[in-house]
Length: 214
Image 1 (cartoon, rainbow, N blue to C red):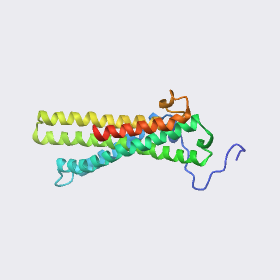
Image 2 (image 1 turned 90 degrees about the vertical axis):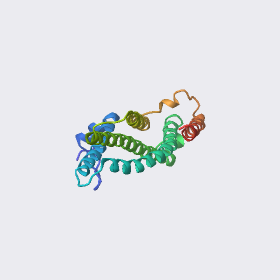
Image 3 (image 1 turned 180 degrees about the vertical axis):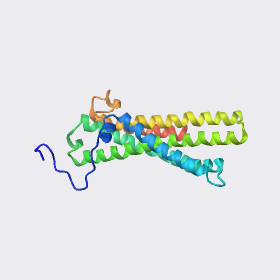
Image 4 (image 1 turned 60 degrees about the horizontal axis):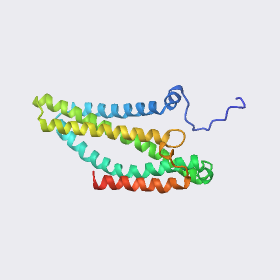
């Protein structure tokens, strides 16, 4: 073993070119994870759809009930966690000191960003999977009845656009949390002491908008 190489721990994960290639670009990680989770859901749907007595509408309604409740809960939770994660990120870059990663506060910030990043990417894949389930249910329904009303078509269009936006926005937020350096939100904040108050105001405004408008 050369002097430059560090001894590996007994249970350390292997390093291979696939892992390295994916982690070189955040977009690759997003594409990989979304593709994997969505494909897994579609395979599950395909297997279940070929079982005896399968009803596409019943499956869709059961899936929808749980998924919508989950997305509603996460929509609020993600705002709080994302703004906290971004605040830690920007304070670490601009303020340093107690916020740096070699200090307890900075280490806690790294943990928050890790959890928030995984959660954001999971929600992005959940929305995309939900969209795939809708489209496959529509396909099976049209195959059975041979038609779709204008009202149903509009509902499908609204759901499709909404879920695409949810998936894309969460993927974008994931990039902001995981990308090296400060977030673009802090570019016009010269005084680091204003980062937390401003982000707190944005968080409260966003929560109020979701609660009262949406």
